[in-house]
Image 1 (cartoon, one colour):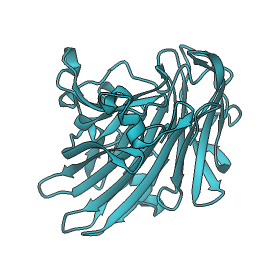
Image 2 (cartoon, one colour):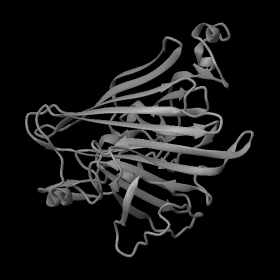
Image 3 (cartoon, helix red, strand yellow):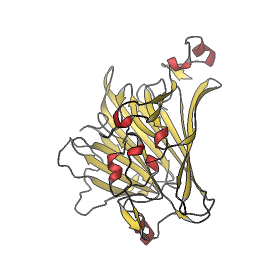
Image 4 (cartoon, one colour):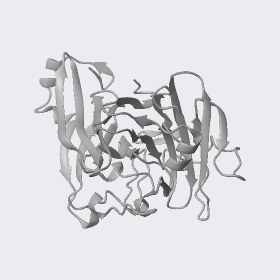
Length: 348
């Protein structure tokens, strides 16, 4: 294990601590106040600066992520509200969405509220508000490396409707500032069912400031809405109370394995400002679409980088374009993504 600027064996580490959680690892938590009461969290500390909270109450999505105690992500004013408050009608999703590093949208619907084949759907589907079960959270040695794994299953079901299961596995290692996410989505039903999924990664202050730049793997960028300029999609703006959200669709990727990178040349470390980048990687074979949400508003000051298998106009539009993904009975789709923090001192 590489930690604190040198390499260690397992026994060297064990001889210096009472328990591994002194350095990093897992801890199960539950919030106890207000609308967050009962919301479960699994805190992960990698010992190299990165910490994050996976949420069993919410499909094992990832809430706050920090580096050296400084936030990398945007948190909504809703907090880690318990999903029991969720309203699936219209835009009710906005009242209980957490923000944080990862919000999963889907599994049967993504995008603006709308209707498809006579059925009404609310914003971004239900998966972000569904609790996981068969949860496993463990840390163990593999040789001289200490590995952290969280896994669980989330079922999106309806009588006389869909039966789709998300199986998620989140992995990190002590000494490394990296999160690996591996998802399987399977149709456990006995009829074909639409499948839409979007990985809504949300970055915020102080990672985002006026000196921050964003590098995308795309060769072409188009705004979703008419009149929205393309210029400035890769830069960050100061907060503006009346800022109108900008949504961009990225196309023409360089290959299968691609990355988007956010770079802040003056990230506020404890030792003083220093360059820091975060990198999000995925497969365009698995997730061929990339949506960018630029929202430099006051209070809603967030950049969304969103690999997906669809765009965000809703299911009827995907069906009309002939791009709606259909899962046949028993069919499985796999998705793999990686998030990492890169500094002068620590890198993967």
